[in-house]
Image 1 (cartoon, protein in one colour):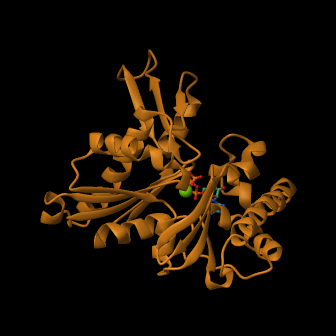
Image 2 (cartoon, rainbow, N blue to C red):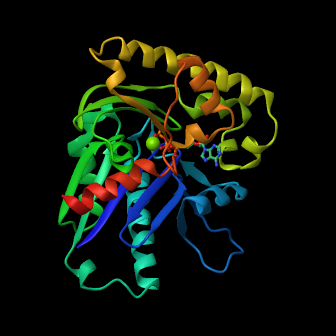
Image 3 (cartoon, protein in one colour):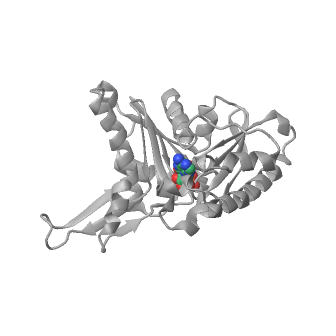
Length: 283
Ligand SMILES: Nc1ncnc2c1ncn2[C@@H]1O[C@H](COP(=O)(O)OP(=O)(O)OP(=O)(O)O)[C@@H](O)[C@H]1O
Ligand SMILES: [Mg+2]
């Protein structure tokens, strides 16, 4: 059986399998071929290719995920099947797509903490796309907890559309919130697709610095608020994952406001998916 961990985020799809991992922008696009193009009809694209379609004036670009939840079914299905095809293609290239694949796929998918109601709908969308042996749906930050080999921790995951803060006790999520303030809050003033350009984060940018400071004010305040409801707050390590912690200055600013050390996974943006894959392997 092939095991897959899938994290379909607002900004990026992250998918980890036994063969390797993929990451691509959560974008879906279609356009009608022009009169002078060799073939005719409607064509679709996903990920970076969808972004590249925007040079054609009649392109429709869709962001199928908003605040961590599917909002466009056709686009979301395209992201899921693209992720699974890509990780399986890695297996093919390694000549590795053996009986393991034929005996089915076991997948664990992450959702925002507050999106439990979406579980059944999400399962239906995914089962529409692929034949599955097993499909588990869990709070996405459980992936970071497992990636970090922890049982008790406060996980904060700063994504593009939401920041999740969840307290785990003995691997049980006991308190949690999905906040609508995340990296979109930092980059939205710099252009719709600015987050896809590395230069946005490498250039010295006073707008980013100012917005990082605002976001860490919000996030530290919310974290203190959650910690104050815990009996033994020192019992929990604080781990911060998600692409947001990779934004220059974010870790430093957060630590300064929290007045404590935080732990960051080795590959913060992939951490949820890495842990979800581990979970798919053991379940
Ligand atoms: N190399 C990098 N340097 C700086 N920032 C980065 C880097 N890579 C990603 N980011 C930031 O992380 C964001 C994406 O993070 P992530 O993939 O965790 O969000 P998401 O899972 O798509 O969103 P959500 O969890 O809210 O649905 C990007 O929009 C960007 O702001
Ligand atoms: Mg995410």
